Length: 349
Image (tube, rainbow, N blue to C red):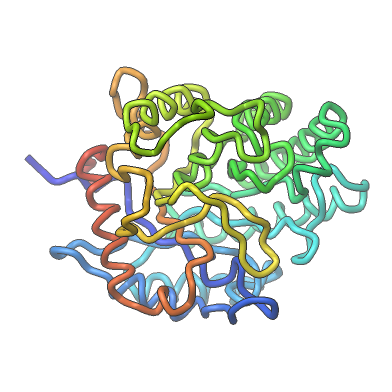
């Protein structure tokens, strides 16, 4: 029997940027992260690719064709493909709130369009066989809560416009469920926003560290799934909670991040507190990474959904010292391999 070769195993580049900067640690260069990714190896298995943050200092959102070709060459030189792209939709990176002024919402859509242009060109070059464009609402939950109905409609309108632009480039948009983004900070709220968008090329990006906080109702207590007196030692209750959560969100899921969480929130630099990403080997991790990934990758009957061709590890806001250690990436790769062994499949290539 042939070993599973899908989903492809990707590393994320944005931990070198997100939560870094003048009020935190310096960014880690993309070249460094690509080298760390390419050098990781476990029993002869290596990462297949990386997902890309399309923003300085990693990649200029206004890259020329030559700049895009250089990025493709950079990946190919290390035998890596490029997968999902993060569109820089936030005010500080040229975007704007998805429920803001007309100008801010136009800036949001413009950033998505620029990311889609880059994504299509990378596809045309042949270095990006699969992946989505990742977005969020670019606004905090408290601002959204001032008028949930009207603000959800505004966010949905912005997302609709972005979806229509993305469709012109053959791209789908995935909204990442993080407790720090308004209109996306609870699981029912997230579904409501996606339903309001009503476009075939909108979906959900599930991150195991972020979605764990949905179960606890962080920032949306009325959507809490686990009982108030829940104890992490109660693995069966946790699994039942994950079943409830994934049954609702799995049909929307078009992109997936493998991750670990210790049950707490964390923020760094200018990034608001969200589900804390932990090392794959963290003894305080609350998830059984390989087993719990299955709640997202298999349907309620245990059948693989195969809705995406790659999965990505997200180690957002890891300290630079941790990111510079080869062992970090070997441990992460080992966790990813376990996920693929349990929930992957084989395809002739």
